[in-house]
Image 1: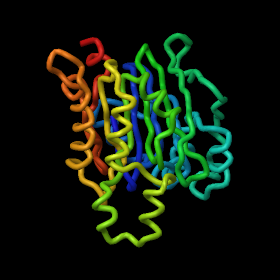
Image 2 (image 1 turned 90 degrees about the vertical axis):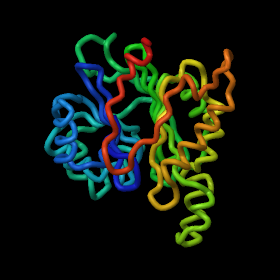
Image 3 (image 1 turned 180 degrees about the vertical axis):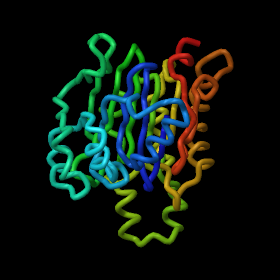
Image 4 (image 1 turned 120 degrees about the horizontal axis):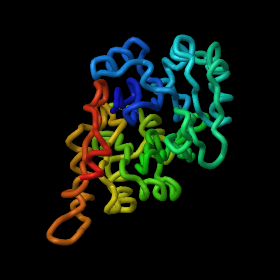
Length: 277
């Protein structure tokens, strides 16, 4: 489930029926508690927090979470060093700090190591101290998330091409951005390889990483001012329709494509039932 996906705040929740992970802390503790409670979960439903980077829409409430929940926060060493100095996290992050080692890391959510998720971080270009995406293997399912990326790297494509579920940035429509009111410097910051991905860049990446095992494709971090859900959806839908899978079907017919809402929670997507079908 996405709790929020955009410049106002980012937060994602993964759960296997017993244990859970939250990625990014862009919503308040009160809102986190209410959204989970409304769907039958509590704050005890997740045992670990992952962080993608140190921009405020991803860590604004991380200090409060650390203070009140004291759950382990996993991030790279570079990112943890930045969080230790950041005004929103510096007072409390040391209570919860867990550095991700290079390579695959098993998160100890439960006593049986075989039941735990294995997390691989990978660096993506973005104008934060460091920004990472995540590839998570859990109960045989591959989950990929990349938000806030200036361009698509070969490493990101490699992990996305192994995933059953992909959450991928589709931030802006090029015409809306360049025809809009943003100052020139901000437009350049967004589009020149270290900011965000356009709908067209996302669509081109979809053509490159799509594979028959991809069951869900979620478009995230849509711009409020330079995009619409319809434009983002249509660009990736066209990319999927361009992939012939035989028997008169295209990739669009066998892959669930959705845009994630910016300021409200999504539905709960049951990944395992979909895969078993």
